Figure 1 (cartoon, one colour):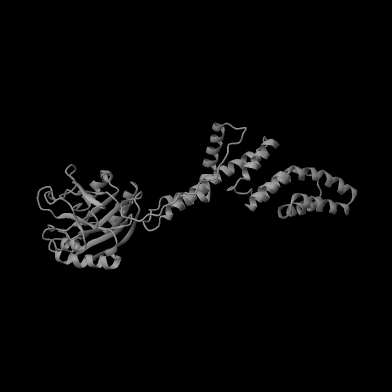
Figure 2 (cartoon, helix red, strand yellow):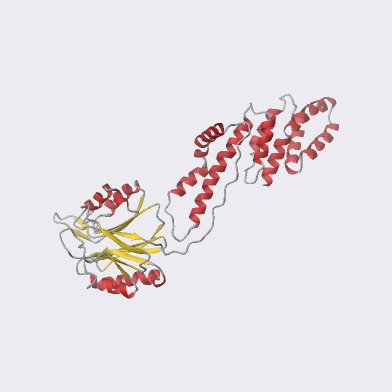
Length: 404
């Protein structure tokens, strides 16, 4: 649509861009500063914008202003990638890859039609469009029957987009806003805008009927299965997960990465974006469930049977291991504060050996060391063995999870 200047573009914004996922504008007449403000505001509606300004000219008050200019706005839900732009021979053009097809938007001022084929030839050579799908839209200020631009596009196998019986302006029957497409299956002319008066040009709708794109087939990897602890109801479990998600997961680095990635536009050339976003979401989900299990385990009211069940749940494939810091904290709390420094040293050796070999071997080493200690230390060590055995299951769980 030719907006006839910045006011027309803002009127289109006020109409929420008529809920079109892709908006193609000509003759925006915006300076770079004006465009920056416009695209920032458009981002609130979920659009990314690309702009090629026109030449600077003096207005009737003697101020320099940009004339012409072309822009493309794409909703973030549409796979798109900027292809480039140029301003040559008084003509402005801009290109955006949309779902594997190159969309070229052109504004050709009156009298510039003979130079458009050379401009199109630059796009064809740069992007090798002979073997790719494409669509060219714009205000050519020339009827396609007489336009050298359309003659060039027809030689490339293009099909007309538009209806010559519908005038491009409200007060004229001249057909100067039109387009061409490489495959008629890719896109077709839908209808002219006869309802909303946004500028002196009506604007028209194009319907993407088929995206010509070779897609990779596959499936997203499923998440690990997280079971509800047997002593909790589903509602209680859901409430615990909600608390963890709000207070801990949403503050994690993984969640920040997920939210930042989800706001990026999809790239047509890399379908792995979907898989990467899914993987980031699963990491956040994994963090939420795992942290909830940890919080339950560390709750003083958690019984030994409940802890053993939590250990079993955490041993399932795909689970993260308990952090060694939390493990050490649990051990230290389970031991008597009356244990001497020597006994703590033996216990530290036992824990280290337990993590690298097994719990049984570490206890055996601890007992051997106790032979060389005094009788009093041996009595203290015997008391410590009870605490070590009570932590056996927790240590075994940590070894298993670290191995996974």
